[in-house]
Length: 455
Image 1: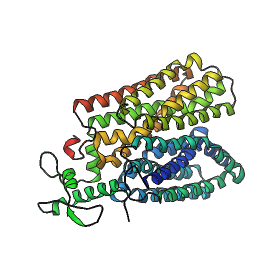
Image 2: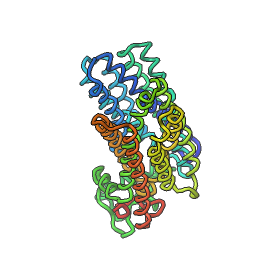
Image 3: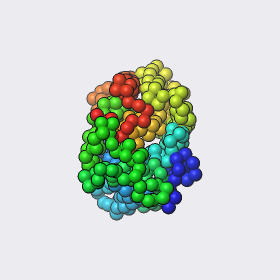
Image 4: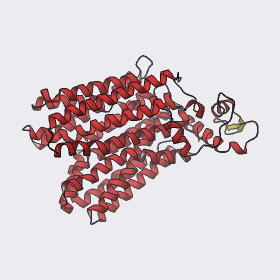
C-alpha cells in the first residue's frame, strides 16, 4: 500500500475523517444533558447521583486518551479508532437492556466514555502523522467539528422523543458505529510508519548488531537508514535500552515544560467546565427560561467552531507562537469571567459572555499537536497527547463538583464565577511558565525524541 505523504493527497481525506469523528464526539458530549433527563425519568433517582453518569462520561472521554497511547504504540490510528468505536457501540447497546442506574453509570459513564476518549484522542494524534507545514490549520479544522457537534445536539433530543428513553441508547449505538467507518479512512502515512519503525527498532536494540537497520518506506526493502539511526542514537553516542510504555510516560512526564503545560490544561479546564455546567442555570436564576439557557451553550458552540479554525490559520506560521496564543486566549477568558458579575445579570450580557466562552475556551485543542511535537518530538506524540487529554479530563471531573460544593454551601454564582476567572488566569500563567522552562533549556522547535532530550 502506498503511504500517505504529509500535507497532500489522502492527508486531506484523513482530515475529513477526523472532523467527522469530532462532530460525533461533540454531539455526544453535549448530549449528556438529554441523557440526564432520560435517566431521571427512567430510574427516578436523585439529581446528584443521576448527574454523575454524565460527569463520568465527560471525564473519561478526555481521560480515555491514556488507553489510546497504549494502543497507538503497538498498532495504528485505524486500529485504535475501530476499537474505540466498538467499545462505544457495545456500551450503548448494553445500556438499552440495563435496569439499574448504577449499571448505567458503569456502562455509559465508564465504558462508553473510555471508547469516546480513545476515538477523540486518536483523531487528534492522526493529524500529527499526516500534516507538517499545515498542522495547525488541520488541527483547527478538525477540532471545529466539536463545535458543529454542539450545534447538532438538538438531534439527540429529537431522537429521544421519537424512540423513548431506552430507544435513545440504541440509536446512540448506531452513531458510535459510524465512528469506525470514519476511522477506516485513516490510511497509514509515511510519518506514522516512520514512528512505528523507530519504536520497533528500539524494542529490539538488544538483538541488533553494531549497525542499526530500518525499513526504506518507499520500497519496503531492509537497508541502512541514516534517518532512523539519527533518531535512535542520542547525541551522546549511546544507544538507549528497550523502552516500554511506562517508561515513555515517565520520560514525557519528567519533561518539566511539558508537565507544566499539562498543569495549565488541568487548571484551565477546571474553571471552564464550572462555567459550562452552571451558565444555563445562572440564566434561569436571572429571569430567563430553560430554552434561553440552552441557547447560551449553542452560541458558545458556534463561536467555538469558528475560533478553532481561526486558531489553526493564525498559528500555521512562525509569526504567531502557539504558547503565546494559548496564554492570550485564556487570559481574555479569565478577565471576562471576573467581570461577568458586572454585566451578566441581563440576557444580553449572558450572550456576550457565551461568545467569549466559545471563542476562547477551546483554543488549546488545535494547538496540542504543535506544542507536543515542539516539547517532546514526533516519536512521543501519541503518549504526549494522551497525557494532555488525561489532564483535561481530570479538570472536567474535578471542576464542576467543586463549584457545586461551593454553591451548595451558600456561595453565590457571582462569587463563584469571580473565583473561576482567577483560576482560568492561573492556567494562563502556567502556559507561559511552560514556555519559560522550554526556552531556559533551549529546547529546539523539533526536539530530538531520545530520552536525553526529554529529561
